[in-house]
Length: 269
Image 1 (tube, rainbow, N blue to C red):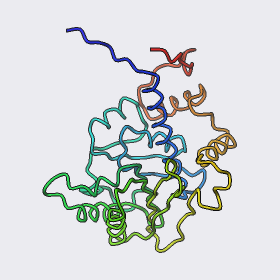
Image 2 (image 1 turned 90 degrees about the vertical axis):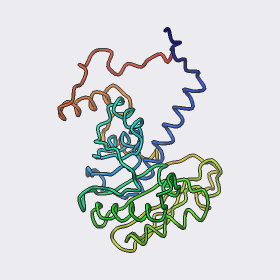
Image 3 (image 1 turned 180 degrees about the horizontal axis):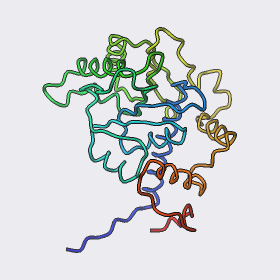
């Protein structure tokens, strides 16, 4: 039987590009909130890693990562994209099965809110949240942080999540970027393993909104820092060659470099 080939409209492609851009920006912000030491590669846990978009941002920042996701389909997409991190299939609500002190930090983009749902009759959101946070606390090195960007449905979910996190031993709280903006508002739960610390400053607070824009500045800042450090711009030929060389050192199968490597495509299908 003949099948009709998939066609992608410019609107669809634009929406996909925008979603990838937003995911990258939120990951960059999560990295900023982790407050890792500059120019020191760290070992990061990506919870709800999906297709590896956040992991790619971690790679570009020079870090190593392991991803966990409940969707085998999304992990298959990540494998097709040939991301550099290791990934495993797992349910957050059943806990993190890693050795104590394994990670220098943890991030999660748009995943934490799902633990508030009871998808099965055996699921108890408070118990699943406590199991998750207590095992996460154990596998993080002392003094490290965990940062969650999430979309709570209501204040009750925020209270439930933070309550279980504190019960598991974390300190910290919410950082809400651009709280007065409908489009740019983002909520981050920033957790500490090393006792009480001052929460990072939110972006877009009243004193920062004098510019009259919802643009998120941290992505521009990170790009400038990359240029200062001499890193090639993302998706450039040099950037692609560097990434391929890293994979060769890891023993992976990589296509040979040719004159077409890194060449921009026309965008027509």
